[in-house]
Length: 392
Image (cartoon, rainbow, N blue to C red; front, side, top):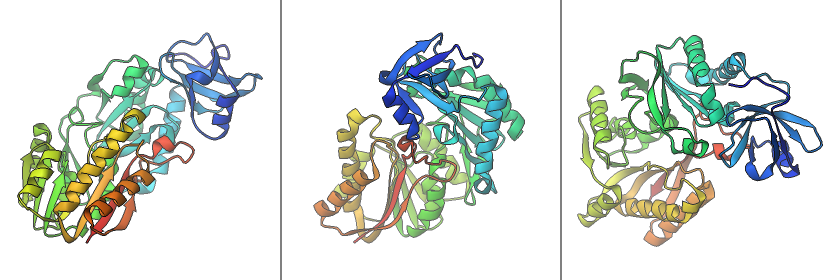
């Protein structure tokens, strides 16, 4: 950890200055003119070529995102800084946290803690430090979380591929306390097992919490939950539907989903391990039909270079799902790909409607819950698009 110092500086060009003035917190390598006395992972003072102090930032010597802005030039980055930012993030979530034991505490740039993700599961927290600078403060973050939230343990899920851009190792381990996993959390009257060392991201998809509760009551009769993961949507919809077929390609995630169904005494869910694309085709071949279908796939577009292929993937699964729906059926379809913009998703769904000859009506457009806030000047923070459609 370096201390804030006027000698550790980065000078940026006019394009970088304009970017900051527009409210975007990233400065790319191409806009950094000079770096003085800074090492990979330092906190640096950012200046214009005219010498104007622009603020403090995390510095990376290896990533294309060279500077991640923390705030004004007068801030001092240390334990008190991180405690203050975490407390501010919690204050913004006060209404959302009431009655919840699982939520996102810090959402990176949207909470003015760039490259830092913090999720809470009961008396445990999971952190991700996705830059070299954030990594240096990992111990401080863990201790601060224990003090502020009264936690029993903190786990790091630092196995995200983004860390490779910062020359950081991929790690998944407990870094504070002695946890008892799995943790049982509560969501919309249901219970779910979460093991922060298993599964994707930090162990559970908290960003769909609101959508799981609010959208599933629309689906009755026979429902298909494709990409069911740990059974979040399947368990919620099972309270309203007659029967649910929950499909996923991961045997280990299906095992957790089964335990979650048992935990909630839901006996109307059938779990099946299969490749979703193949299984949708097989269901169509068998002329099976559903009153409701849920599509919550992993990100098909992880980079702009894969956008075209990702769009084809999203269109294919939605096309196959629509063909399986009875007239008047309901489709919940999601994309968590940040690079797939909302208008792109709407365009491909329009093509699905045209290709199948099935009128499709949007009943609800949903995004991220309040604990995953979208910073308007940082479009990268807007990634989750979920739609409820009626298919005639």
